[in-house]
Image (cartoon, rainbow, N blue to C red; front, top):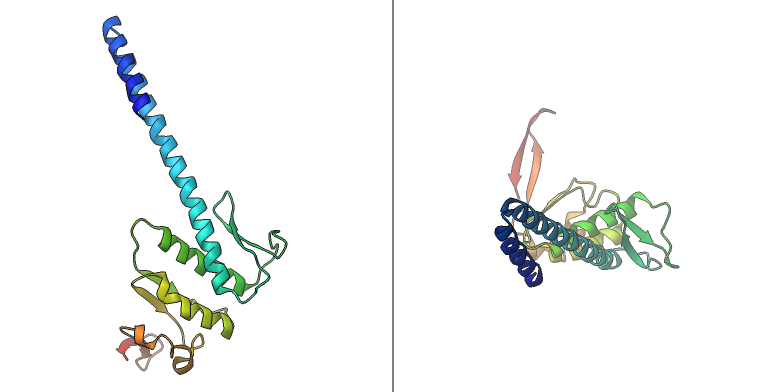
Amino acid sequence: LRSLLTTLQRRRAKGAVKGDAAAVEQASMQALSDLFGEAVAKFRNQMKEEVGMEASKEFLSLTSEKDYQGLVINDQYGLRILDEKGGVLPVRSAGAEQIVALSLIGALNKCAIRRGPVVMDTPFGRLDETHRGNILKWVPSVGEQILLLVQSGEIRDAEDLREIRHLIQTEYRIVRDGSPRKSKLAKL
């Protein structure tokens, strides 16, 4: 950066002597724009790699399939599952898709410059009991404030929430109010 600034100052000084200050200013602005573009690209690529690595760690901690090697992030920022030989898994189940999505949510929040609240809608919808248990143990590590929107078929209140009950600050239930179009929020 210092080298670039020195070069720009020299160009400006030469241009001013030659009477071509506008051309030197234009070249200076283009050089700064190029530098900024390179910095953004470098940061984006670095963050992409960090998110990919963190998502892979999250995935391995959440999945019950111990043959997987993890995840890899592609050029389109999609996550692919690596099988036991390091190859990309060509087809994945709905449950595996859910685990990949949750891994990405966790990775994005952990790699963010500022962590924010995490809201997950139907996070357990496609998961078996083992994966549901893994996710429930993992959820408190994702962020400081987490909102889970679950429907009654996803979670068994007494069994599933036993280990994290002490971490739940407030719990609400949507209750039908006599009509299919009316409901109310009830604090539990």
